[in-house]
Amino acid sequence: MNFQNLNLFILAIPIVTSFIISIGLYLYYRKKPKVDKGFKFNYYALSYRRKFWRTVYSIPICILSIGVIYLMLGFSRLFIFITFFITILFAIQATYNYVMWKRELKH
Image (cartoon, rainbow, N blue to C red; front, side, top):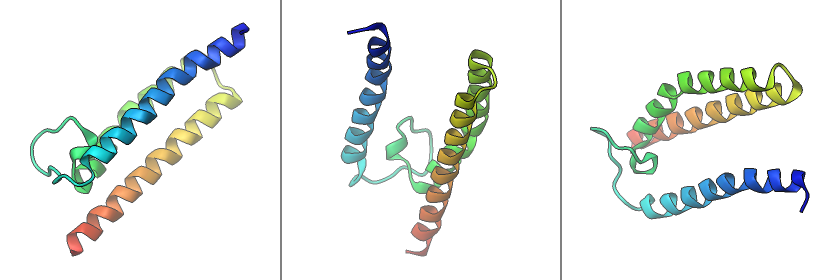
């Protein structure tokens, strides 16, 4: 195994672990009642309203993360891609949670 493959393997470990944990938490909490008041650390136990607001509150953290990535990588194509990808993901997540929150209110 050469050095480049080792770096990709080391990068893949936290990504795969996060993905597996996210799926497990989603499956565990999907049929449980959701929390709409008070503090709840687990994202999957929140109502859509709370998920939407958590997404909105995490935007400054996202901007700070993009700034750190810029300091580490400089202005490159990779930086532009990462910025675009994070922005699109946050927009999709916020839109989905908002639509589901409003749909939940109708029922």
